[in-house]
Length: 256
Image (cartoon, rainbow, N blue to C red; front, side, top):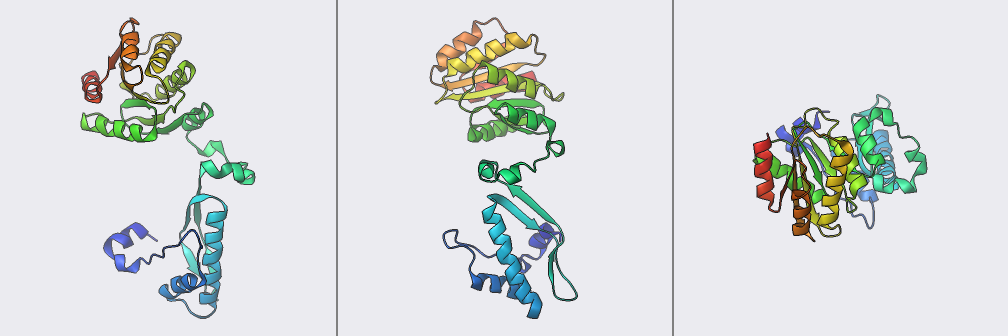
């Protein structure tokens, strides 16, 4: 219980066991873990079986987390998982249709569920600058520069490598569902996707949606970036374009 506090105040009480994924959890490691917990007798034997089953369940379900908290030793030396939290890797769900069928979207953020249905990677945050980016690494860097410029990211949104007009429009609609958004920063690196294609998507989405009541700053770098900037600048829309990321960040700062 309260493992974070234990790790901070008494780190010597936290025992770690590294497992080679090529050979899996070994019997001597199970015994070592049980010994470190001070178990003996029937509890010791039961726990070595328990930890082996735990590892098999973790690997077999393509999980990213199995957290047993608390784990209880009863008066008659049985080991019981009193509570458990499991996080599955979405990329592995195709191998586990029985687990995918257990999904309850009523327990999830409805905006994130909607975004996923459009193929968008979206995480809702509590800031004031909406982000639309292609690539998870670039999205993280974009959120960092927003913070450095005095703003706060309202979301993580990766439109992926197919940022066409339809996907950009859906991304706009998802971002604007958050009433705290005061500006939108679109940061695109044109590698797989051409910048002019994204720019056309922004223009088309803006026109399809009508009046968007917050400033939009678009930073495009890479393939056809100059053409994309020209396309936006000549569109007649209230969209600010930039090539340099710092220039885009300065425009966001002014917008706030």
